[in-house]
Amino acid sequence: MTSFQDKAILAEHAIRGVLPPTPLQRNVHLSEAFGADIWLKREDLSPVRSYKLRGAFNAMRKVLAGDPGKADFVCASAGNHAQGVAYMCKYFQVKGTIFMPVTTPQQKIDKTRIFGGEHIEISLVGDYFDDTLRAAQAYCADIDGHFLSPFDDEDVIEGQATVAVEIEAQLGGMPDRIILPVGGGGLSAGVRSYVGDRCALTFVEPIGGACLLAALQAGGPVDLRKVDTFADGAAVGRIGVRTFDRLRDVSLVDMIQVSEDRLCITMLEMLNIEGVVLEPAGALAIDALKDLREQIAGKQVVCVASGGNFDFERLPEVKERAQRFAGLKKYFVLRMPQRPGALKEFLGILGPEDDISRFEYLKKSARNFGSVLIGLETKRAENFDALLSKLEAAGFTYTDITDDEILAQFLI
Image 1: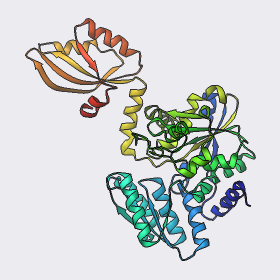
Image 2: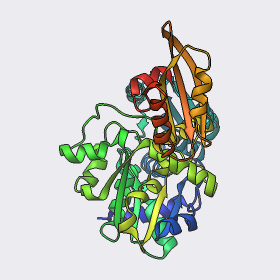
Image 3: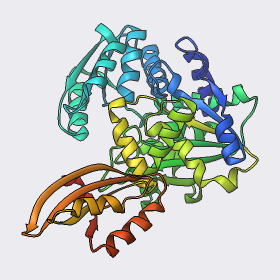
Image 4: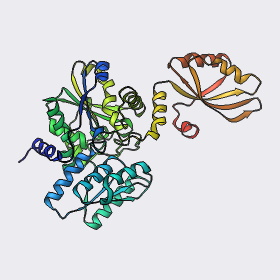
């Protein structure tokens, strides 16, 4: 029987007809920052700016090799998987139907259409992905097509393992550690199955989509009660059955859950310092370095930058979340006296590094007072301690709503 490692190597040879190996680049900035030899596996530089093309290619080539007449492929995706499938439908000259939620941003729909051209049809169904998935599977059964899972498929897992095959070839051996993002588990299951115990592995999930952690704690795949879709490339509500079978004995010590807000700091640093555009999920492995400083000191480490499909319309949100996490931006509801000079008095309390980013009267709560929504930015987090002390000494009352999800949702 052919081993998984041999299958992954064969898949890596086959995929050379589609794309060259993605770059493996030593990053000087990160290496110096963490006292280690840090390399980035740049999956964001693939033709579709993510690794998803690998699994789609491998699954489709195997289906077509076994049944050349099986030319109807179906998938459900709002992001990278859709683009990978579309790209491979055009490559193999076969028909694909891609189901996407009605709420999918037009930019993603347009990119998917460009990659697939006349070989794909895009069907917008459902407000939520679960509705989209059910519609895609029902359609696939009706036409007797082949459903291409984004991760829960042995051929997809095998295709994603080609990332590790390339890393080994490019380094001339295995590094001390590979850090991987985890969504539905296709990439992590494939890399782990190929690597075995030849190097340490760290698996990184967004806190709002930690489906592998939930499955490990429950002893099997479970539905997350709530999913934060910010890191959409890894925000999966339930890990795959097949992927979990390959990950069920992962130690919790080898897992990290990353805050979506902290992730924004890493995205901005990579953009501003390195000129590297990463989507939230694509920055997970790099962000996890902050939690591994002691373990990786002096070691050779590869971070898989899994994707770079980032819509720059989201940049203000990324900056906002990064500033709030770093303590450089806060929002308050301020009780402002309705008397001449009150606003001037408040402005005089602000320090030289403080700036007003938002100022909005909400209502007058009494004849002599009014409520003001105010957003403040500063250059150093400790500046807020001095500012709030001055406010209290001056008799201003306030409520900090920065971390109040309900109020922030309506007011900010």
